[in-house]
Image 1 (tube, rainbow, N blue to C red):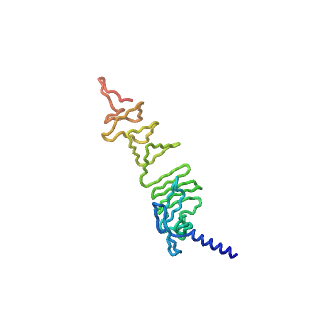
Image 2: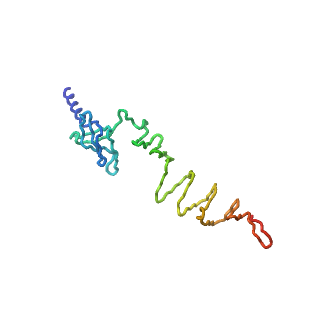
Image 3: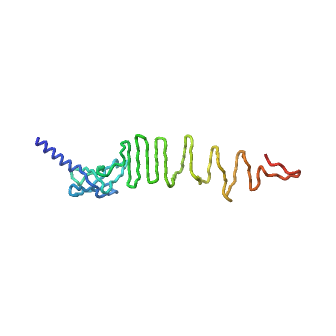
Length: 234
């Protein structure tokens, strides 16, 4: 029994040197490494330790701890001279950003966050006033500023309809082509001031109201003829 207790004591002592909890005291972002201080060990500080990551070859992950963050470390046989920072953990007044086990959430110090809920299959990205909400079938984007999309070619395809709601819509292009029918519920103006151009129609033109050019009315003007005035066109 004494041999077992002695053996257990050695194992516990060895594990206490291999697995230790400390606080991040210095970070080296360019090398993805950091130093850790151990307050319970007389503020003894480790050598520069590699921060563990998911991938580092074909896929490369990057995520650095912050100064003052709790760290769980694994040391090799050389002691605190060689080892790894396995990660951090929640303790004391520092609480997780979510209490939902169906969520995977990353929250940043500036208030931005990314969260996916596997139960509702929803993805939310929030950066200040910009909010993106996505489900299996819809995407909603909201921002207090402007949304800019730049690409060599952009295609927007709606299964049933596409609706644009805005106080004003401006299309800046040397040429705009509409291949289907066009229905305009309000007024139509061609050109502004003296910058107007010509209008060409391949088919006939029908107007339910009057057509005017300057002060001349198509339905109200009268031609003067040798045998008297003619009636307006009908």
